[in-house]
Image 1 (cartoon, rainbow, N blue to C red):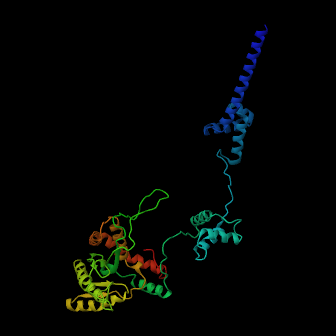
Image 2: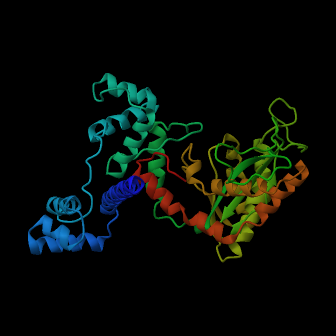
Image 3: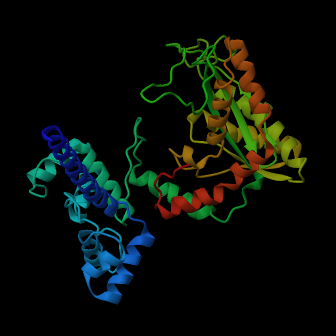
Length: 398
């Protein structure tokens, strides 16, 4: 009897504990369930509550705990929906006024870094503390997206600042030529291509692991190829190699009587006669153009072109002129500059092993420039001049 009583007591106790455990599990399950209800279940709760007007009845009919019902009813009453009410979040440290002042500080030459701007904003009492530089940059970018001043960081050597007189000349040239047809113009220039990366294929863009940087074999004193060329709507002239080219002997001398290391007036006269005028006549006449214009910049050696053109016209009864009033410091107006960049990138991507290979690659690329590229470059003059006028003579992004 004693043993039977003890067993019965233990069995009763176990059942009680099991019941308590199940109840605890049920409560826990209910608490978990209220956080994992489907949208359909939530709306069923709201619908039942609207019909009964009672949280307790709704809990019983929907087989849900009354705290869960109360939670979703309150949510519905507050928001009119069942999504979570958004938290206002932490107050931003940079409002529009602070962000605009940060823009002005970043654009100044005195306080050009985000860290310096953060310090100045705090000193001026516009921020409660010195903000982190990343906070400054995020605030400035957000301000730009919201209609404020948009600024970006740029690297590299700054471009030469144009004087007011220079801007006035550019504006006058653009205004005078904005309606000109550029299909009968030859754009000329000189470019020195440097053999910087022997044996390395260097493309304009390269993907590397985050934290890494581009690397290529480079030389401290690269050899160079110095050439003149002219582009037209109808084609390109031959590349004319001049003094200043590595491993190139020239018959021209400088004012001191020694072998010229760069272009001289005498050699430029030869460039005009044997390349620009001869190839230009072939390109234009082949397209039915009898009268055309030679463009050149204001290099002092280029004055030799006037006598060369005059003599050529007299001997050949041709009608060739030189484009006047080309403004100084205006490579952004000359479309051939874009061609130089394209050729440079094409050749560097080849990975030439020797200077001789590099030299020939440049000449081959110049001879094989797509005609559509030339047409696009020449046709861009209208837009270039329009932008110069819009910026009142200042530099354009070309």
